[in-house]
Amino acid sequence: MRATLAVGGNALLEKYDRGTAEEQIYRAELTARKTLEFFRSNEVVLTHGNGPQVGAILLQNEFSSSVSPAMPLDVCGAMSQGNIGYFLQTSFQKVFNESGIDKKVVTVITRTVVEKDDPAFKNPTKPVGKYYTRYEAQVLEANNGFVMREDAGRGYRRVVPSPRPVDIVEIEQIRYLMNERFVPIAVGGGGIPVIRTDGGYTGVEAVIDKDLASSLIAIELNVDIFIILTAVDAAYINFNKPNQEKLGTVGIDELKKLKSAGHFAAGSMLPKIDAAVNFVEKTGRKAIITNAENMSDALSGKAGTIVTA
Image 1 (cartoon, rainbow, N blue to C red):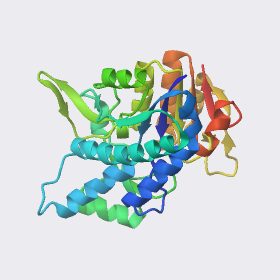
Image 2: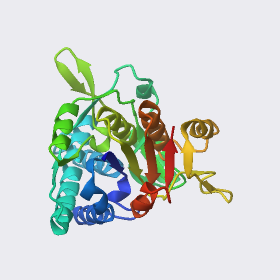
Image 3: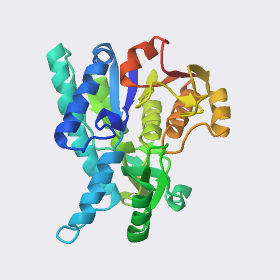
């Protein structure tokens, strides 16, 4: 079976981690061990988020700008692809070697095409960086001109434009690697956002949602299943309320109704729902939303949210 496995930010950082390299390599290795058996018998392209990491890079830019030029957001995305790819590549390869899995992991610095007139550029929604209190968020808005919004009841985060991905520049390279039994790590953080120009491609100030980019690459690679790993075991309606309810196997028409009713938070579960619906709608195959601990059970229909046509 061929699959796209999208791992969330918690694959590298938990909420109260400081974000050190040691922490992220440790978390990456835990994720590798939890998902190991799936890689043994399947051909997989691995994708990942970068919200906390690119946020940290932006903070480093800010505090060191007097001595080192700050980099634009697309370059920061490329930097995060490199360092997260290194953490994942090192950790997964170590676990593969220990477990006798004859596969090599390789990171592909990936560009994702967006439209220059995408309305997202006028309405930033994508969270990046760490969580702040309400007061801290107000200070950042006043002093730095950031747009800050509450994120799923966990605090406030900076939000930036998140245009919809329309193409993957390196898709042929990624397809070749999969066909040759490599495990590519691709579209990290949704990919480096670029627009088409006469001379090729030019980077833009944005962050692409990694779930939507992962859905796109899953469609373009024609995989059999699309799996989204996140911090929770499944998607919920009435999340964090006394009457919250887990979604098990659910069709895309029902998910669209629940989305319209406002059950999924923007910048949190909503893009995962959109990504799963997009994949199932375009392919007729299934998508799964769950966490690493429940992935095996979700594959056999015993856990997680299983999205079907």
